[in-house]
Length: 166
Image 1: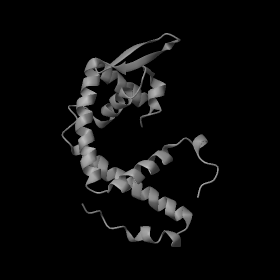
Image 2: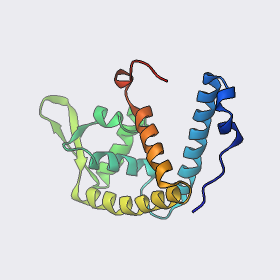
Image 3: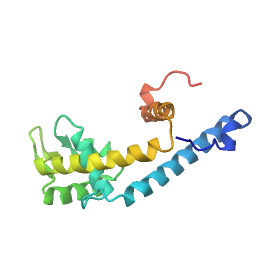
Image 4: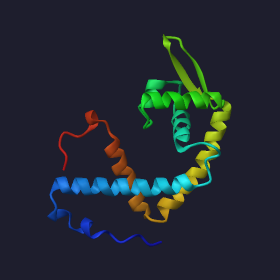
């Protein structure tokens, strides 16, 4: 396996200011995200789901208990009205179940139906294989571990950040 050569900008990190370095890193991350998302969107694994539909099914599959729409919204990149419409469509398709919240009559709990769980698993296996193929073709195991570590660190809430950053 070969890896792509390191971009010249990466070799001159010490000559760039920290702000420039951070912005260059951000641009590189967005570029990688865009390229990968285009590839994954074109994959024939979605079984009639949009990637946003799948994102909601995947998020619900990771939850131990039914979720309120507001809780689900913290994990997906959609506005509350957009998420509400998407969930309505998933409920109509029988992939997501909605039941009353016993503690708040204005709210509902959302969970996967058996059909939704089966579809999420089937699509998830195929999508996971595609993700693995795309990433392992470009990155070594050490680079994959570093990418995971850095991504988890960037995902931390501000309250969980260390006092000082390097």
